Amino acid sequence: MSTELKESHLIYKSAYLELYEDLLRIGGRKRAEEEEENQEISDEQVKSEKEASNKNNTIKIFQRIKTNHDSAAIIPILPDGTFLMIEIYRYGVDKVLLEFPGGIIEENEAEPIKTARKELLEETGYNSKVLEYKGWFYTWPSKMNKKIHVFLAKELEKVSEQDLEETENIKVKQISKQELIARFKNQEIKTSGAISAFFYGYMIDAIYGGGSRDIFSTQGREGNVHPS
Image (cartoon, rainbow, N blue to C red; front, top):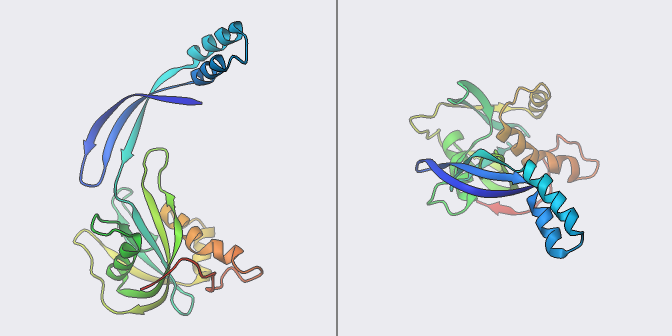
């Protein structure tokens, strides 16, 4: 399927995002035109394909959100293998949800690891001596370009109390590996960011990183390690 941007209108702009309304032409015109240029089929066939393509070409409106602020998510594991998580109120769904620590990468934070270290400390009061970068994923690719960068935090140490913003209401929770897996199985973890971050940050290594190793093991492959 080919798409062609006909118009793009900025609907809303803030410090963190821009909302656009795009008019796209969607259809199969591109293939017919390419084949005409290559002269691989007869003129009659090209004409027939163009007529069919034109019937299928439609103009549709799409909403697109552009942001220059990605986020970082941290999977903190205590020395005994317990996961450090947070309960946080989310206004969009009007619910308190269980998630992993994380936050928006601000303009003065050039590298995601700086945000990861800062958010872990502010939201939980813990510092991590070792942060392993595990990759990134899109949060809402059909509408938005936002990415979340995932870090696995090891060798945690409680160094302070929480340092929360006025709008934040966060409780720190220590969740055992067995309990967390059970919560995933029971579909109690409802945020896509937490689910994807856990898979990227922990489960890939747990399943594939050590052959027959138990998926509950806290020992993963060392790679892309960032000492604090």
